[in-house]
Length: 547
Ligand code: NOJ
Image (cartoon, rainbow, N blue to C red):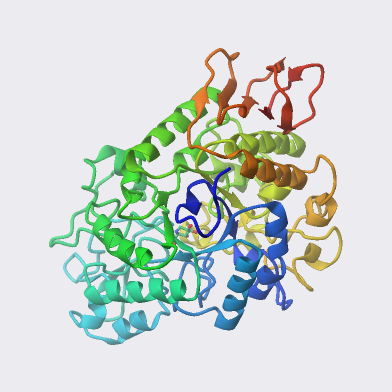
């Protein structure tokens, strides 16, 4: 059995981490927006689920130009979400229940409301206040053109002009100006932030846009040409480390510096990088003297296809092993279509076009999506390494694809001129009860409308109900904790087409049928199955754990 206790400095290696998107989790004060006291009240749900840690998406003061990833003060709590005392109470309760706490750090940019940016706006070009960000004169006769062709991830130019004529860089929304990591004050301030939360007892950090901090700001700034809209997808097309702002080699110096802070605590604080970079480069972020892990987005992006998944799993394990890290697995988070819907979309479907159609082209069979999601989850939870579970997936929630455009909050919708619908469909507040306003999320409504179908997914409807998705997760996590030992996996090659089979420790194996027809169930005692089994067969879209 793996030691996941706080005595073990490596507790994170095979942990299951539950992502809480605080504004959509539980609303204690009834203002329609989830809050920290809501999280504290519902921590027993996480303990009963059997996860090892929770990761909180940003809860800092923010005008919500990007769902909280526009941080006005990284060392405080948004008053709508609570206070620092509420935060301390939440950490204390989590620890009492044996749950670790990971917070999200956003070092690539601040909110434009951050006092530094406000100061920069008031200061003159070339001043120290402007040097904390990336301000440049424009091109063209009167400086009327942006300094480079760099594009915002959310659409349009990554530069915005200020009244005195200079431009500032924002790789995300204009309300999220990029920091200049060449500036020592910026570096020092983040060290303070890491210590601030570590001193308050947090066990680790999720590093937002970890691959974006270092930029090539040597003059003249370089255009990227037609490498791709955001540049991230262009990384495969440029020599490693040579893109002007993604995944530059110098970024690692920052994490080596942070490692000293992490290691000054007992147990050492852990960290996971959000880095949208190809596998081999991803491993660099998870070297022992940097962050511990990096999210594995290749796994998330793989289709429901046995061969493809086997390749991605084997590659991810090899990459992590070579770096001395453990692999990570994610199926859903607050940025992507929930996997109960996504895995059923035909290969090659454009997720955005599907969202724009209100989830009607193609229309999905919700029950079939749930069946596949449950199979995918049991497969994920059998893999060596740690799994990141997104709030609501333990209930089998589908994407809310038909949100009317008037309610959308994601800046992507406006910034792309209504071309991309954005990520609100996976951020709809989750249902706790089968009735009542906002299905137990809060005493009144919810900041995004919940569909009536949410009633049947509520925790209340599923807790204690045999065969429910919630009970499947609970059982899987309880068994996993008992069964875990090493980090090795052995594939069986004599499987029918479309079937994946591997064993973990002696006696524990996982078989997933991703094909369209039933196959004979291999011998062994069935520990858990994602769907009912009949007549010694493993039906399509079903995963079993065998002893
Ligand atoms: C990644 C976060 O997950 C996403 O929600 C956010 O919009 C960007 N980083 C910018 O902070």
